[in-house]
Length: 358
Ligand code: SF4
Image (cartoon, rainbow, N blue to C red; front, side, top):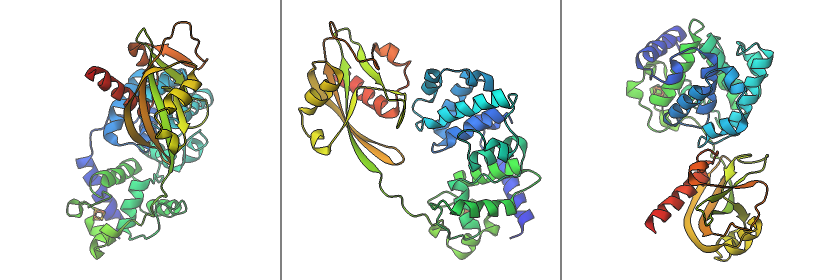
């Protein structure tokens, strides 16, 4: 490969074709950092409104460092993978306290921050500070696997290093920021997982896979084993004042510290029993329920686990009853202030649809 020509072709194309994304309008390393964390496991279209709201709410490192957990979890609500924002918060506090509010400008220093791995450190330092560092994620591995016909399994953790070395051999030292962003953009718009648009590709003449007709066979990626199936019963309980009961999830584990409708993990057989809600769930929440009705059945896929959720609605008399400490009654308006992860938002939508039909 003629590396200089390759860099040039990529950079010229990127300059011409790059999408106008909010985090590309400045070189503020904090903005770039936030965007890179949000973009992990999440599509660009989904991230844009979250990013805009987040930056409006926490415009500076200091503003975010001072924010309460409840507040920033709410702003992340629906994006999932909440440990990302918790780690980001700790790391930003670290930057404010120990780096005089300056996001570190080397990969080594950035990697000392909580939740910052090789990809994030490479992306932030290259994009914000023009450091020639690799930022290798799944997209970049796909592009390089095709460009150089690399048949390493990109799902294997050991492969990443191989691709990082290859990127370092080819990165533009004159403009690593645009080079890395160009690679990301190429992976998103042209060298897509299925049906790469080779005829429109700016680096087609450098691509070994295209020359040998192997682009649809690359990259090699072994399939992940199917995650564990967990069966959940979740109940939207309404009292005589129209309030809903929500509870805070435990401080550790999946969706830690977020809010949910009273829910319980059950064995598969119990999912199929209509008595489960009255017995198992009512037991957990101290109330006698009535008008119990199934309103939803859906699944929610996390990285290593799939929740199979059966959702119910139920009524109860609140007066004279005590609730357990992690629970609270809220009006539907107040519910909007609590960070409710996607599965429970979905259940709430079913609840509203069901209510409007009755
Ligand atoms: Fe990807 Fe095709 Fe371009 Fe090669 S020519 S980099 S396979 S889009």
